[in-house]
Length: 144
Image 1 (cartoon, rainbow, N blue to C red):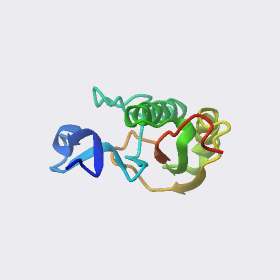
Image 2: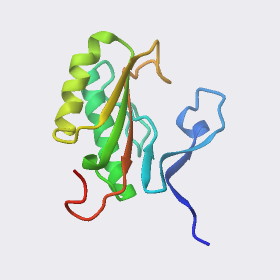
Image 3: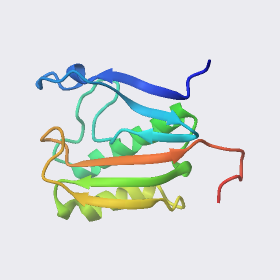
Image 4: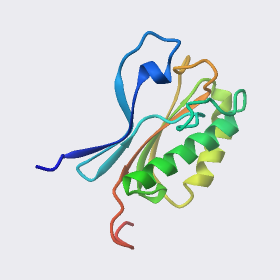
């Protein structure tokens, strides 16, 4: 029997957040029913777990979007297949910068979007987190 979903880049939170007393099995993406669900992406290198762009919301947004593109590719999807994004900002003043960077990555895609301002993210140096949902890529020209 084949699995009904695929887990991409599984990890345990005790490795990702060694300073916190956590032990949760998670992954960066799950493909289920033709949909790709991504974990919220931040300014972090997925291979080294190092934070990047500390103090620079534009650099963190670039890295989050690069992570999203890479994970979607690994899942058999692409940025063009994104249907929804949720953006979490730690300061409303970051909105224009974040949406400008994200807009370059998603030009012509037209996903639905939700934006929230939150008190904090999982680590104090993270200023933005972007959560995306996409569909699996179909034959060329199948989406509109």
